[in-house]
Amino acid sequence: MTGARVGSALTDEQAAVRDLVREFAAEEVRPTAVEADETETFPEAVWDGLAELGLTGLTVPEEYGGFGADETTYAVVNEALAHGSLAVATALSVHCLATSCIAEFGTDAQRERWLPEMAETGRPVGMFCLSEPQAGSNPAQMSTTATYDPETDEYALNGEKQWITNGQRGGVAVVFAKTVREESDTSADDDAITQFLVPADADGFEIGRKEEKLGLRASDTTGITFDDCRVPAENRLTEPGKGLSAAFRTLTEGRIGIAAQAVGVAQAALDEATVYAEEREQFDRAIADIQTVRHKVAEMATDVSAARLLVREACRQAEAGEDYRVAASKAKYRASEAAMSVTNEAVQIHGGYGYTTEFDVERLYRDAKITEIYEGTTEIQKTIVARGVFGE
Ligand SMILES: Cc1cc2nc3c(=O)[nH]c(=O)nc-3n(C[C@H](O)[C@H](O)[C@H](O)COP(=O)(O)OP(=O)(O)OC[C@H]3O[C@@H](n4cnc5c(N)ncnc54)[C@H](O)[C@@H]3O)c2cc1C
Image (cartoon, rainbow, N blue to C red):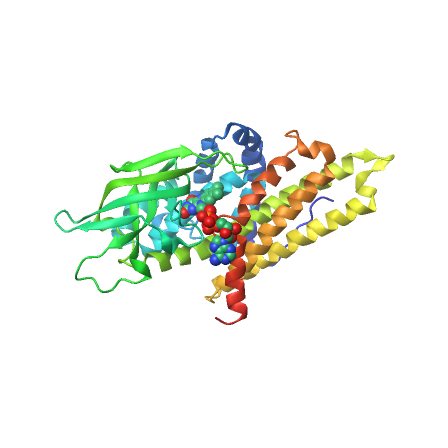
């Protein structure tokens, strides 16, 4: 038996979606993952396949042609896709952050303009531009500005964003900037951070070079500079000053997706290690018969199950309309830690072979690290959990 999974209370529909995505990940995604990683190229044919399955509209409401997924479905899709490739799952989850922002904060006109196309064709690919070179864990310290010009009813965006997933392949960006306020506006808070929708072909939207990364190499990550980038006021997604609280809401939802992706990576490493342990012989027996190896596998399987249950609990709270911020942070913190330790042990079980590109555990080990960093580092997740414990 390989990589037993915990099956906690999915509806028939959720289980069917999970099985469909697992099959797609095994047949269409995983086989492209090694080459995509080596060549640092995003597999666009896989993206088109995701669109055909309706997954590029995962968080888009059904009335706009989307899937209208609940949190649990969002999580099981992320886990199943990440089992095939974390780079692909990451690209999809960032696209979903963008569509979620449009769905939740946009006007009817903005929803109609963008969502059906983004859901049905997966294009334009969405981006989420929050981080900056000097503003990561603390986005409030961002320096990108949006200056309103009453004569043209436009904002001029100026500044630099960093680490933008889908930066080169993306077609539309949700951008956070500090609004330089109009005199009459007294509604602003959050240090006046506002959310805008900016097409990548806008003048002054400059795409930087692709980062060379430890892992997640098929996902393109770039800087984006705004050089007097003119955005019509109708492209504002939130009222002035409401952007940061909106970002945090979107990121809380997103964290469940990252946690689920971490579970998918850990499960993939466990599956690889289990198969290898059954095949590899030393001392005239399969290493799967050596108690030390068996204990490693037991610990790995338990970590995966525990992380998956934390993800499910966060989903349950979200679906029940509860405040699920702490649950999402617990899930992300513990699932990313599981991804790191399980991929580490999977390499160990492969011995020297695990240290080569001949086996996939090497890529999984490199990819796992990012789950402890993006959409809020482990330290930030622990800060949120501690606040919950102390009732702050
Ligand atoms: C591959 C990749 C893809 C990404 N994609 C996107 C994207 O699409 N859009 C986007 O906006 N951003 C994206 N990011 C940015 C990511 O979210 C940030 O890197 C992350 O939030 C951390 O910010 P930082 O890198 O500036 O680190 P810093 O904030 O400088 O943190 C450095 C260290 O200090 C610790 N630290 C900082 N503050 C505290 C604190 N208060 N308490 C305890 N420890 C603290 C951190 O935990 C960390 O260990 C991506 C990053 C990567 C690497």
